[in-house]
Image 1: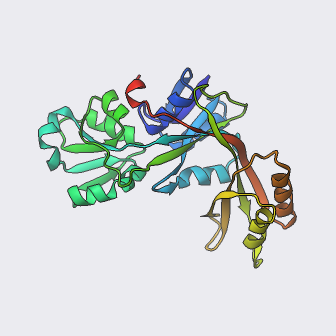
Image 2: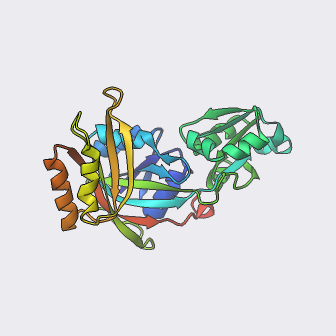
Image 3: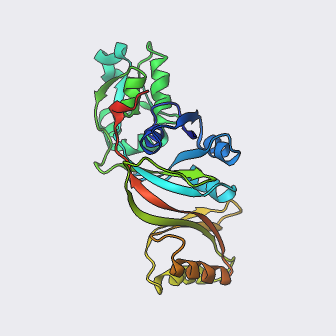
Length: 290
């Protein structure tokens, strides 16, 4: 089984893969669209990509791609605890407070805003495609006064020195990763399902007052619990949006089926991304550095 993920090795997505499919062949991709295209075209059997962070919210690139492209369904989600550390090349350990640039994924930089503002105000922040990509770059440029924000696994994989641990602004820092595949998947037996979810995307009929209220009412009067609703631009003009909705029930629930049928009768377009189980992963960073 081949699993595509946002690479390089030692990203948080890599941690999610190794927790969920420990025996799979892992294939790293540079960007989220590359990873999703790989499973779409069956270059890999499964793709795992970041979906939402507890501090920074939805990964918009993932959401937009899932709306505008035809993809295999979401088969599972895995929630990974996120610990961000500041690291440098060992040659720069003694002068780490004098770094001239800090590299990481934009979400990681945002998650550590308070620390960076207090400790490195004025230092240039450079965005990379992933936290591990930033760590890898520093390992290849030992002569430069650079630091990266990444996880412990990346520090070990790329032989960097952690100089400040747990620099994220809030203790509860977790990321949801989604598993997409054409066929059903079997996750690690050690992971126990927390609950069932269904994720849909809804496009409202244009220029009709109260359409969103009608959509939400279809769930409300049936007492169907929604854990998330978020709007994203349709990219067709100002004021045009679609809505992503997480439903805390499986798709086979008759009330959910009836609600979706009612929404479609109202003239809305409904795209079901998947009905799946949610799992908590264990962040064994030191154990998965291969």
